[in-house]
Amino acid sequence: MCKIHLSLLTTLLLANNTAIADSIGEAFDNGKFSGQFRTFYIDRTYSGTLENNRNSLAIGGHLGYETAAWNGLSLGARVYSTNFMEIHGDDPHTASSYDPSLFGDNFDSYTFLGELYANYKLNNTNIKIGRQKLDTPLAGADDARMLASLFEAVVVSNTDIKDTTLIAAHVTKESVGTFGNAYAPAGPLGLQSGYGLGFADATSGRFRDMGNVALGGDVNTDGVSVAAVVYSGMPGLKLQAWDYYAYDILNALYLQADYGWNATESLKLNASAQYINESDVGDSLAGNVDSNFWAAKLGANYGDMGIYAAYSQTGSSDNSPATKGGIITPWGGMPAFTQAMATRHQFFADTDSWKVGASYNFKNLGLPLLASVYYTAFDIGANNTYTNTAFKASESGFDMTYSLAKNAEIRLRANYPIDFKPGLDWDEYRVIFNYNF
Image 1 (cartoon, rainbow, N blue to C red):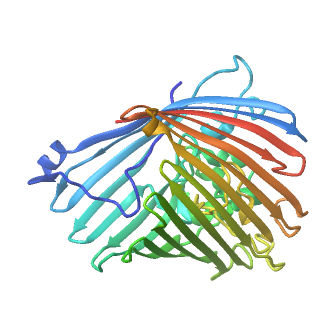
Image 2 (cartoon, rainbow, N blue to C red):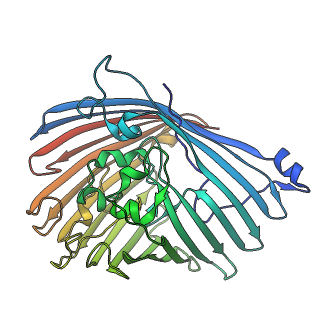
C-alpha cells in the first residue's frame, strides 16, 4: 500500500507565477506539475512506566498542478496521499506495534485533495483563496510526519510600503496532518502542542471548523481572522507582529524580532526575541484565558559551523481550567525557540525552558551533509495541565540530512526524551527519503 504526502507550494506570502498566458487555454497549456515522493520510517522504544517498541513505514507524497497566470489569475490543485506498509506480518494494527503518526484513522491509508485554490496578483497585492498550506507562527503546516496540516482560507498580502509586507487572512477550516494521531486520545498535551481537542474529527483528509479542531465536541465558530506586519527595512533586522482573533475562543498576539550582524569577517552573530499573549474573547469557549510566553535566543556562525542558546518562560495563573496560564496552540503553529523535536512542554504554565544546539555543514569538505545536535530542558511547575504536579523533563537529539542528488535527500533524525512524563522515556529514530520534482 502506498501513501503520498502532500506538500504545498510555499508560504502564506506566496504566489509569484513567472509563466504568463495570453488566454485561458494557454494558461492551462503553460501550467506546471510539481510534487514530492516521500518514504518515512519511524521507530520508538519506550522505557520506564511503559516498556514497548513500535515502528511504522509509510510511502506517499503529493502531486500538484498550477496554471500559468492569465490577467494575474492562476489556479492550483494538489493531491496528498499516505499509504500504510505492513511490516509486522499479521499483527493487529495497534499503537503497541505501529506508530500512528504516519497514517489516518485506524492506521488507514488515504488520499485527498488537500489544495484547491485561486491566486490573483495585481501589482503588489496578492490574493489566495481556497484550500492551501499556511506557514504562520500560530497556524501552520507542522510538516513533521507524512502529511502536513492544511487549511481553507483567504489570504491577502501587500508590499506597497517599502520593506514591509502587510497580511490579512481569514481561516475557516483545517485538515489535520498525520502527526495529530500521536496525541490520541485528545487532551491538554495536544491542546498545548499544536493539535487541539478535536483533531480526530479533522484527520484522514477531512476539513473541519477551526473551533471544532481547537475544542472538539460540537464547537463551531466564525473561524480565525489574522492580521500581520513584517518589516525588514534596516540591515540585519526583521520585525514581525501577528494577531489572531479566534472568534469566541481567544485573541493571540505574536511578536518576533531577529537581528544579525558581522562581528568579524568570519564570525556572524544573531539575536532573536519572541512574545505571545493570549486572552479570551466573546463567549470564552475555552474558559478564561490569560497567558504570556517570552523567549530569547543568541547564536553565532563561524564558517560552516553554527551554535545557539535559547531560554523561555511561560506564565502561570489559576483562573483557567483549559490552560492554567499556559499557551493554547491548537492549529499547528509551533514557533517556540525552546521546543524540542518531540517534547513541546515549553507552553505549559509556570515553565522555564532552555535549549542549546550546534550545526555543521560539511559541503566544503566534499560531503553533501548537514548535521545538527541539540539539548533541551524543561522545569515545569505544578500548575501545568498535563500532570498537575511539578516535574523536570529533558530531550537530546540529532538531525542529519544527506543530499543524494539535486532533488533527492535522505534524512536521519533521533530524539531521546527523559521524563517526558514522570518516569516515561524513549529512544526514537526517523529515516525520511524525499524526492522533489
